[in-house]
Length: 130
Image (tube, rainbow, N blue to C red):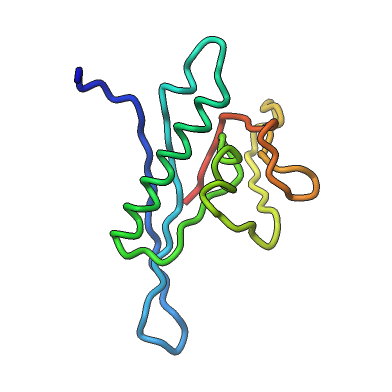
């Protein structure tokens, strides 16, 4: 009613040509999101999880309407709170990004050493490098 922005989500598309084919593969990558559900004191993980699932669900619908073939999301920020519920499949390995800032503390990646989603180690911090 008061036209306040409470949530935000974004993704971008990369088109790749398919070898020996005239078609292209259109891949969406989850980029940034924000929600006021993560700003409560004390933080409510269940409220954040509910809101993020709704946001990502809407993004998946928008991507389908845009005729994108694949939607990718990494295990960073609070993504572990929605990846399984939104039926994202696990990749075939772990990606490692290196930031050359030795003063930075380790950031939890949202997965266990066995590459399983871990909702308890979400960092709420993310960097996506397109």
